[in-house]
Structure formats: structure tokens, C-alpha cells
Image (cartoon, rainbow, N blue to C red; front, side, top):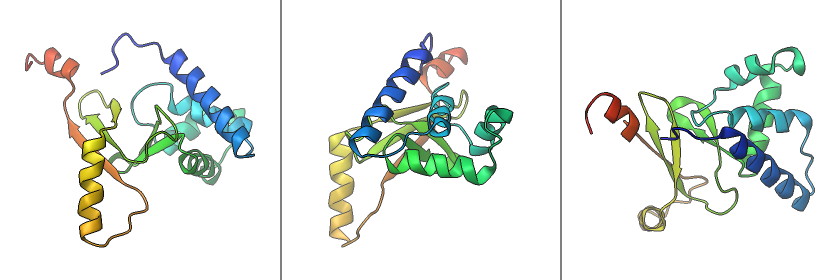
Length: 156
């Protein structure tokens, strides 16, 4: 989904957004939170907490609760999304712009694409309202095969 893509730009943009959001909200964007965000953005696949812990190595001598607290902070402030089906995290491409996004998850290459479509979100909100339900968070995950993986297998 992201072939020939320069991740350094994504990481840089994500960190700038995080700095701005934390400054606006008077929150501490610690070195550990910054590093966890950078690691989540290193590729466009979903990052599992224990993989992040391994990548942090001795740099922060972090323990699992420390990584989960950093991920919770990033998620609460709209900087990452949790992909429930994978029990993993992806960076938010446009923090605080949309409440309701959905995700395309390639089961072959493991990349995750964040998508926002007002009509999909509106339909879900209407359905939820009709059932007098008060959602805290909406996450729609669609698993399948991206175009590049289809081409590799000759399915396109």
C-alpha cells in the first residue's frame, strides 16, 4: 500500500503534530513518548507493544507497563490508533481531524491504511443513534489484500 514511500517524512510530521497538540493541551511530550511514536511510525504496519519494547532496548530500560502508558497517552491524544484485531498500534495520519476512521489491513504484507469517509461514519452514527447507544470509540477494520500483494500474486 505504501511502496517506495519515505517513512522519515511521516515520522517527522507525526512528531511535529504531537509537539503541537501537547503544547496546545499543556501536556508533557516526554522523550519516551516521542520515541514510542517514532517507532510506531517506522513503517505502515501495526506495531505491537512488545515489539516496541524490544526496539526500545536498553535505551530507556522500559518495562511493559511503561510502553503501554506511553501508547495510552498517544491514543488518548489522537496520535495513534489501536487496531484491535491485531492488538497493535498505527500512527494517526491526521490527528484530531476525524473521530471515526476505518482501517484497511493487508493480511499479506501487514500494512494498515487509515481511511476516513464521512458517509461511512454518518451511517454508523445513524445506526448507533437508532439503537440509543452511546459509543466511546468507533473502529472499523477491514482485512484483505492490498493492490500490491494482489499484483505479486497475479490477482489484479
